Image 1: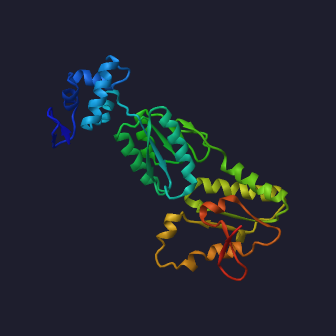
Image 2: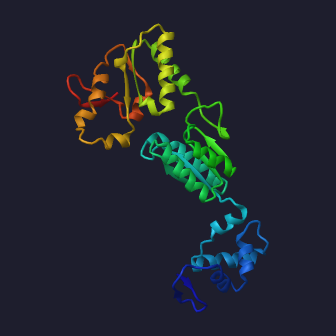
Length: 287
C-alpha cells in the first residue's frame, strides 16, 4: 500500500514516484537522495527520508545490483543451523557485516555437497557480494560456478593447501592431537574419541588422525572400542524405526567405561555425547 496526494492509502507496493509526490520532488532527486554519496542538500534529503517513511517505500536493491552486478548481501553456507556449534560463527560474521553496511543470508546444506551446490547457485543468482563456506570440499560444478562468478570467497572449517580464494581456519588434526595430549598430561590413559562419520567428513578424518597420532606419541595403544562415530543430529532424528534406547546404545557403550583414569575429548558435546551414563543404566548426568 502507498499514499496518494490526499493521504488516502491506495493498493500496490510503494514506488519511487510515490516518494517523489510526497516529498514534492522529481524521481531523479529521490534516486540521488537515496544513493550515497548524496548529491542533494540536507534539507531535500530530510524531506525524502520523511516521505520514504510515510509511504513505506523499500528501495529495490536488486535493481541497483543489476548495474553494479553486486549486492550488499553475503551468502553463508553452514552444514546445520540447528547445531549450536555454528551459532557463534554466524553471530560474529553478522556483527562485522552490519558495521560495514552489509547483511548476511544463511543457507543450511545438511552436510550435503549437492545441497551446498544448490545454495551457492541461488546466492550467485542473487548477485551476492561474497560467499562464506563452512567447508573446503565442494562439487566440481560448485567450484566452476564460483570461479566463473569472480566473487570473493572465504572457506573455513579446516585448512586446505588449495583454497578457492581465502581460507580462515585451523588444523583439525593438530587440534585433536593437542586435546588428546592434554588429557594424557592430566594422567588419563584410556581416552574416548567421538566424531561425525569420517567417511563423508574430511574434518572428522583429520580429527581422528590427530587423535591416533597423539596416542602413538604418548605410547598408548589405540582401542577401537573407545572411538565412536555418530551421524549429525538431524540425521539421528530421521533414523527410521530406531528407539531412543537404540540411538543411545553407542553412547552407553563408550561412556560406561568412564572411571578414574579415563577422559573424553571436547568434541563429544557437538555430537550429543556431553553426558555420561549413571552406573548400571543409561540415565545421563552432566560431567
